[in-house]
Image (cartoon, rainbow, N blue to C red):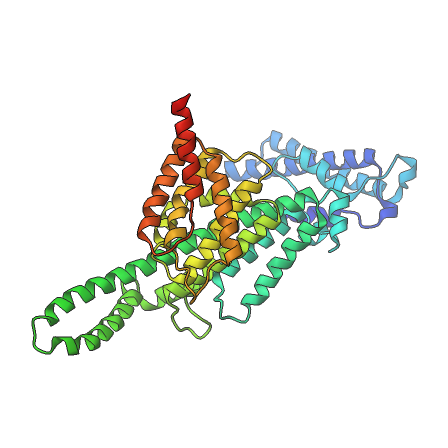
Length: 440
C-alpha cells in the first residue's frame, strides 16, 4: 500500500518542459512494476515460511530485487537530466498513469482527484471538449437530486421556492441550449421525478383514505349507541369532535414511535418547519401540484410520452382520486387533460393499448371531479378543448375499445350531476360506424 500511495507524488512530473520521452516512460514504468513485484514476492515468502535463515534462492531473489530498484534509480537520473528532445516526444502525466495502470496487476495508481477532472464552469467547455462526459452525468444527478428535495421540503418552507427556481433554471437552460445530451438529461431527470412524485401522491392519498375510513367506522358505532340513549342527538356533535381528536392521535402514534414517525413524515414533507403535523390532504395537494408542474416541464421538453406511459399504469391512483379533495382532483384532472392533448399531438405512434388505458382509468374522474364555482378546475375553453381531444383519441381506437370506453363513460355520466364531458358526438359516431358494418 505504501508503494501505491507514494507512486503519483514521487514519479509524477509537474513541469511540462522537463517531462521525459515516451520511450523512457515505458522503460521506467516497466522497471517500477518489476521492482514492486519482486519486493512483494520477497516479503510474502519470508512471512509465509517463518524461517530464521534464508535459503540460497532467497538471497538470489533479494539481490535481484535490489538490482531492480537500483535500475529504477538510474532511470530516474536519466529522466531528470536528459532533455526530451533527444529521446523523442514528451508525454503527459495522464499517459504515465494510464500506461502504468495497464501494465500493473494489483498495483494500480489511485484515481486523480475530482478537482483535476472537473473543467471550468462554462457549459460550452464541457460540450465542445467532448472528453468530460462524467460532468454531464453529474449534471443529471444534480437535477435528479433537486427534484427529490422538492418532494421532501414542505411547501411552507422558505427554501421550497428556492429549490423550485433552481430546478426550473437548470431544465430551461438545458432545453434552451438544445444539445442532444442535455435534452436527454432533462428527459431522464423529469421522468424519474414524475415516477417518484406519482408514488408519493398515491401514498399520501392512501394514508388519507385509511384515516377517513377509520373515522367513518368510529362514527358508525358511536352513532348507533347514541340513538339508544335519551337526548342522544344533542350529544352527537361533541362525540364526533372527540372521535376526530382520537383519530388524529391514532394516525400519529399507531404502528411506530412518535419520534420515528415524525422523522419520516418530515422527510416526506408532512411536517412544517415548526414541527407541526400536516394532514395527508395537504401533503397530497402538494404532491399533486408538483406532479402537474413536472408534467408541464415534460411537455416543454418534448418528453411527455414518458408521463403518458406511467399515467396509463396508475390504476390505484385513479381509484383514490375519485374520493380525493377538490384541490387534489383539480391538479390530477389538469394532468390528465394535458396528457390526452399530448397523445393527439405526438410526433410518434402511441400504442392503442396505452390510449385505451388512459381513457378507461381517467374518464371517471372527469365525470366525478368537483367542477363547481368554489374551485373551478378547467375554464370553459379548456373543457371544450378537452372534449375535442377525448373525441379524437377515442376515434383512433379500434371499434371494440371504443365500445368499452363509451359504455363506461355513459354509465358515469348518467349518474353524476356534472354535464361534462359530453361525449355524445363520439357515441353517435360509434353507433353510425357499427350500422355501416352491419349494412356492408
